[in-house]
Image 1 (cartoon, rainbow, N blue to C red):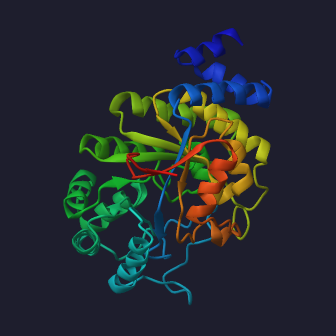
Image 2 (image 1 turned 60 degrees about the vertical axis):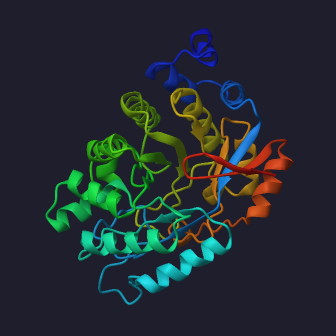
Length: 352
């Protein structure tokens, strides 16, 4: 353990050490290492969250990922595309709750070109300047660019000019193409995901990074994913946070079993240890529930993500944990930490 423990003093570990942590070292031992790093990086004892809403503008998607229970084909009876007025009403409700972040994602819609998003973002920015548009995903950006006859970079620049301020890390799944081919064969490869993120960072946009695990990947794939994220961050410094979450198999083509709580905590802790250059590690109460998220704060997590006034994608897979802002505050206090509301880019707005 000596070489691994040096990480607590600020020295990065390598892939072999990370693999050993994930597969051989006792959970509590790994948790203690992650907790020590978390406390060193966040000595104020603060646990943050953002008041946000996840608006899924459409469920029509050409990608048809095997792990997704949310998507529909264009001709399905329950396929939908929200109009601007419906989206504005949802964002107004977010503002009424003092919300500051709009997480807007949909499928790879077969007909929505860049003009639809530009006009939407312009109007959102005009009507709700206090809300950060933290929306789309690398797969959506590339899809919109292709449909619109643009290069990816042209598309990204135009979206930014219209009001897109930051990009969530959706669609990362596992950043190993062999696994991506097995679970989402129609989606972009890992290098394309990284390309969008790096170009967004160069444009001054901050983004998050995610990992969905527990489907078909092996421990070595999890390790590779973490190091690919770390290497992007070394080049750009643009990731604000990393969010690992577990595959939810219900109602999906892929099926199978969910990762256990033990597996979740182990991956979370190893993520905190490996990603020495990313400031924030987010605990996923949306997939794990409140109590496991509380435990995760002692395994490297320092952030609880958003209040998510609305969430549809994970809920479609039968996972419907809900928490109000007050419940998040009480959860954090109950764990012995200081709750703090933040912006998308981790500026503290208020402590409780």
